[in-house]
Image 1 (tube, rainbow, N blue to C red):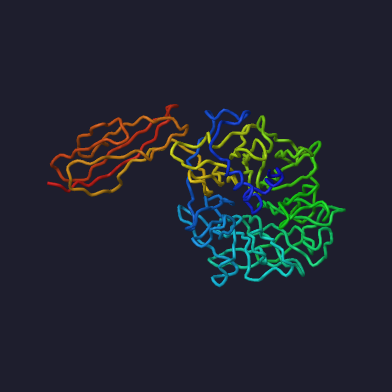
Image 2: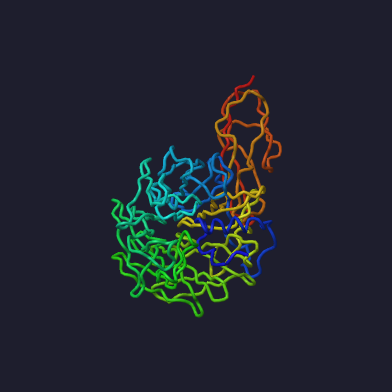
Amino acid sequence: MIPADRGLRLLRPEARKLMKSFHTFLIAGSLLAGFAAAQSQTRYQITDLGTLGGSYSFAYGLNSAGQIAGGSATPAQTGGIAQTAFLWSRGHMINLGTLGGPACPACSSEGANTSANGDVAIISETATKDPNGEDFCQFGTNLQCLAAVWRNGVMTALPTLPDGNNAEAYWINSGGDISGFSETGTPDTCIAPMQKYRYEAVKWSRDGKINLLPPLPGDTVGFAFGINDNGQVVGSSGLCSNVTLPPFGPPNAPHAVLWDKDGTPTDLGTLPGGVTNVASGVNNRGDVIGDVQFADGTVHAFLWTKHSPMQDLGVPDGDFVSVVPCCNAINNSGDIVGFSCPGPMGNCRAIVRRNNQWVDMNELALPGTSLYLTGVASINDSGQIAGVGVTPSGDTHGFLATPAHTKAAAEPKDLTVTQSSIQLDASQSTSADGKPLTYVWTIPQGYPSAAISGGTTATPTVTFPLTRGTYQFQLTVTDSSGTTSTDIATVSYMGN
């Protein structure tokens, strides 16, 4: 059995293991009770991000341009945990490498998030063994783990706090500031000899300077997750006796914290009966999301705003956990994403929250995707969502979900042919609600006529007359609500 609290770090090392364990049981099942009806919700076109040549990939951070940072197995990485950081952009996955370089094939890394200009916050192993045998990055190698930034094609390690050996970067904002945590040189005897030193929440400025984010009064350790464009950071703090941090499990602490731009911490409170509290994401309005674990092991997502105390976002009926992952699971419109599970050994699925209701994203995916969507990592202000799903063969792949619009797509474009008949194609047209479209093909005024057979289908046949020239065919699609969209196919006929 897998403890529910291991789901608090979806899509980072511990939660990645959680999701892989859940995947063993993931055969797309029935809908969870308590989800909102999908019919009136935004539908999504799902893009499988693929891999760097290995069998699995994980999508973490998503910027406003639809670029995604994450980690993927290369052909040499087959262990299910080892991976290499990537930046995915417009259908291409760029290998960002590791701090260990080519001389360290055992090194792993993962891209945590990418800013609007394509800079990537990264955690990466180096080729140096950790002096205390810790596995801070949780890739199973016991190599030193450092925060890093990839900028202008170069990965640069970020500093640790004085005398610290390890650090992790979790998020980067539009100004290049990065949130995370670092070990210090202060001995920590709570779980010695396994954990030698304390760790603190930090913020790195764009110039690489590290800034300590102090824990709440009375606490001694902390960690930071999300950061917004105003420099506010969220995370948690506590004592070394009641806080969990890698390599001993996912971050857990008694106090959810919001650090203001100047580093001043605010205790966000808890829900009635809450035991541990992790603040994981913050938008530019200062709205904070996170998770509370209760004594019975159940986990509920929460929302905190400067106008109201912590609110319980609940779980779908019959479920055990609803988790909002680090670190951008809420956008500036207040849309929230995460995952939900009916129990420690159940069918987890990606969820999105709108109008105070959770919706199963698998019910919102347009036909054609082969992925079963198990978890969501982040959402941008355009409503695009990045997360992970399971392929029919059981592998984990990152995905990008893009809100669907009713849009005509007429092919071919600027094609030159000599044959007298060709087929047009509207199969890439999309419908906002996922229901069937109607198709009408016509010839725009001023262009030569041609015979169109099947002009109300997605793939009509066109027969050209004897006249050479440029022909255009206008496609009009209409969805179930009556919304229309048009596009043009252009063909140059050069036959006899």
